[in-house]
Image 1 (tube, rainbow, N blue to C red):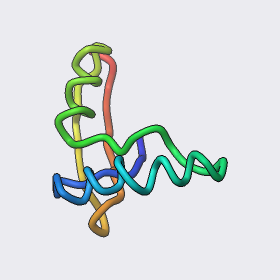
Image 2: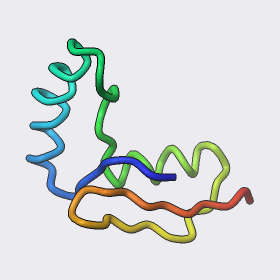
Image 3: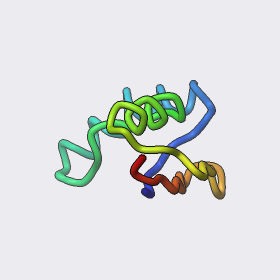
Length: 68
């Protein structure tokens, strides 16, 4: 999986509160920026085992998961 994320809660809040709504108005953008906790919970709920979780270059999520 790849997405945008950050462990910086202020940055995630700014992106979800300001950037994403503006991007959605323009027709370009995602729904929300997930935090590490949200990604991990979603994977567990889907029955996936997280083998590798990295945040590269500050905001690029790289997550390797396997079906259990």
